[in-house]
Structure formats: structure tokens, C-alpha cells
Picture 1 (tube, rainbow, N blue to C red):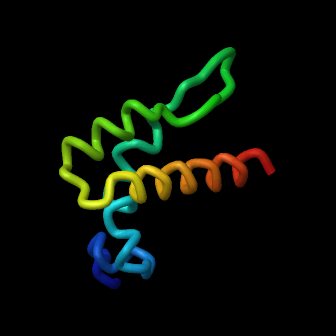
Picture 2: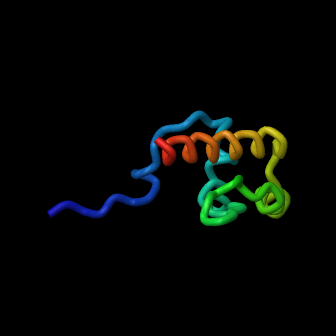
Length: 79
């Protein structure tokens, strides 16, 4: 049989300017605000905490990209 691919081999190609947002995405994607079983939004405070904690070089751009990712996947889940 074949060998198991490493995580680096499984990553899709992405634009270098998205590297920081994609590195934080697994950490924050489940940090949501929910009410009555419905996801309302991603927790902005949790996102900013990780942006600060990991010393992101472009914090505002990274935050906006994470919000965009969250909204994209939320819309995919609603369809």
C-alpha cells in the first residue's frame, strides 16, 4: 500500500498573503457565539486574542480574512 501523506502534502495551494489567516483558522473556527442551537457569529474576541497571541504581522487584514472564511463556510452549511 501507499504511505500516509504528511499534512504539508494535504494542504491546498494558497496565496502567500493568506498564510497567517490560514494558520489561525484551525484554532478559531469553532469559537462561535450560539443561541438556541443556532450559530450566530464567530467570536471576534477569540479571533483577536489569537491574532495578538501569535504576533500576526497584519492583524486587521488577518481578522477580515478569518471573518470572510467563517461566513463562506457558514453559507455553505446553510445550503
